[in-house]
Length: 518
Image: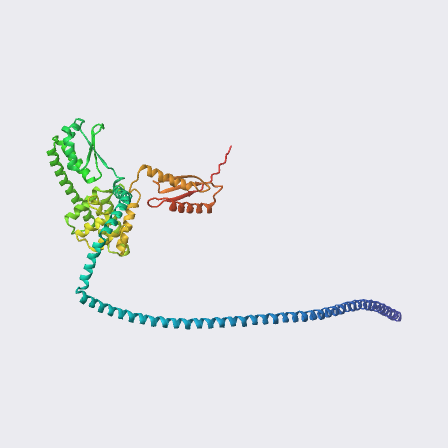
């Protein structure tokens, strides 16, 4: 039994060994075939790579040959260009050297000419000296021969020439006089127009009439008097015109001078209240009213100087300053304008460190010539300077008065401030009035200027022409175009229109969307 088991075990081992050997042999045979196939594939790839390598080497040799040919051509062309450039440079160098030689020759020629001119100048100077000496000797010799001095000879020659040419010059004078008469009429018209314009510019826009109320129309007969004696005496005493028309319970005092109109108004009211209207009484009352108005002028002048802290002005100057209370310029009271200017100018001077006292006096006195400019010849600036010189106003203030309208060049910061304060006070809103027609025309011009731009639907001038409100089409004007439009309108207003102060351009772009809920 044991042997049988052993035999069976040996037999099983042999069978297992045979199976293992067969399995190993079949597997190795299969592996060798796979390796053989893979080796064959690699060999084919190597052959292909060798073919490609040989082709690449051939292409490289061809490219090298072509590159050598191209390099030779480029080198040849570069050598040719270099040779041409060198030739040009040599030619240009020759031209430059030729120009330098020419310039050197011209410089030498100029030096020679300068030397010759210097020599000639010296010779001329010497000749002038000789001529002067010879002239002096000749003059002396002639005086000895003629027994006349130079002055006597000139006088004698003058008399002889006058005798000889007196008829000729008389005829020429007649011809010139006739020509002057032909041209003088046109010149006279121009001068008269300028003079009238200068006078009218101060009073054309102010009220030129004062209304005096009467208790009854019966008083009109007393004012006229027998054969018009009373009204004639009143007009002669006051220098105004009395207009008596069909207006019930009133008469009109007409005149350009506000002070005269005020005196006439006070005198007329006094006479009407008193009831005694006759030439002698008229002269008496008018005289008293003139004294009262004179005192009022002095008081106005004192108040103005006290308000501004100015002292030591004589009474005559204070009275002239107070007289400005009865003058207006474009509806603006001149004294109030001057005091306002002084306050503005003083503040400006204190801010920039200028002399505030000089500025204050310059502002107060800058238009003082307007108090007398209908009575004295000259512009109100010239008259004002002369008045202030008479009262020994210091030169710094005189310069401010003379330069505030540019008649004299401005040479001090104080004069600049006075001119600036004058512009500020005169241009502020409401300071000066204009006629209704001019006002309406100015507003229309503003509106039309704004409407002339594309995209503007409506334009309105508001705030007395200080603002233009512009409504634009939303479809045509965007946000950027709105800013550009405001700038363009402002620039066009500056270039084309004349206006006081500053105008604000307000461009409005509004979009409204409505919905209905039902």
